[in-house]
Image 1 (cartoon, one colour):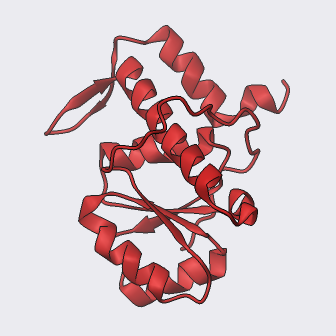
Image 2 (tube, rainbow, N blue to C red):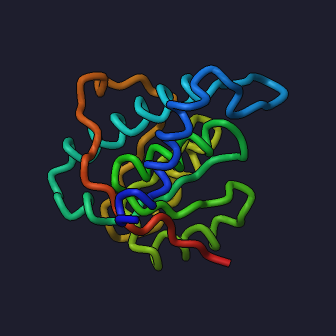
Length: 163
């Protein structure tokens, strides 16, 4: 088996092709089929790609992405989108104290925080607490990334986890 065949995002896409109309995620608020989840993941991956293209500091492309979410569909979809965009993700638990999240941001050298409306202010506080330029992507904001290509070169590493 080649490296490409063993990547998580490749396995996800294979699963989508087999179970396209079957439920992938069920919460009390909504249910997404594999096909719907795949469309959402692609949309988010394009948003991440558009952010990277829009940044003047090209080193941001090689930096991990901090994902600041509450548990739910958005967090799951953004993990897959970050992987699809070729990023290593660092999960940030929104219930952690701000000082802990600041440490994780600085130590991981993440230059992108991907979040949604409920955690946007925390993301801004984290970005302000570091001396490095941190880009923030609010996935709740509609972007013009519909025509952006999705990264073709996947990263063999998935995540950086702090325990």
